Length: 283
Image (cartoon, rainbow, N blue to C red; front, side, top):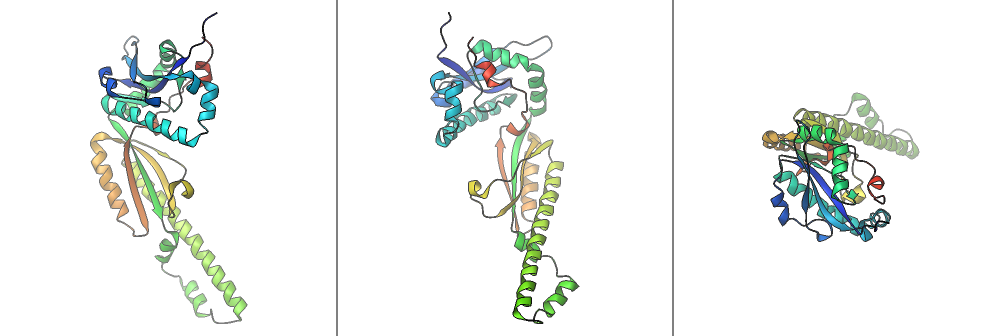
């Protein structure tokens, strides 16, 4: 009966055109050394490198890992270590596909199997990502300030002129209705503004992904987020994209446009990866 393995391989990325000697300076998850597992090329293809580091299965095995992922402090530290390696590899390779957090295999042979099973997808994704970088754009607005920029209609003006008519109850209802109308107008204008800005950003990018707006409790932002986008941009167009963001930010005082990045292209690295449990079975 084979001995149960005690060490696995944590995967960071699959790269092309990577000098593996550059990995010697990196430390990964659990401060482990980083190395490359070569995956031989098929006929007419390019050799690939799977970037890995050793991890203890006592901490990173399937059952323990599932519990650890619920520990926010552990998760944050692990994600930072993972992202640091992915960023370094993305900057050093001619192309790299970031792998999702917590992809663990038993050994190098299993790593090669994982890459081989999705080789065509990796090759296609590498072609799409080479020479391009992900940039994030968040747009925040103040709906009330946006609503105040819309000129009042004649009906609104007439309503204001007659606000003193009737009793105090009627006046309260009119004020309440006006406040609700202003809020609805502001939210509509905010959504429309977000759509317009996204359209202009998407036109300057190769591809885009729209993520759900962040919860204010997590982002710490009190302003209303109307766009949380990721944009894949040609590296030789990065400066022009940044200039576009600055121009959009200057268009309206009630709208703030923030650019983040460059990031490894996580949002555009959709390669099917077999369920981790398939990689964590007894060999």
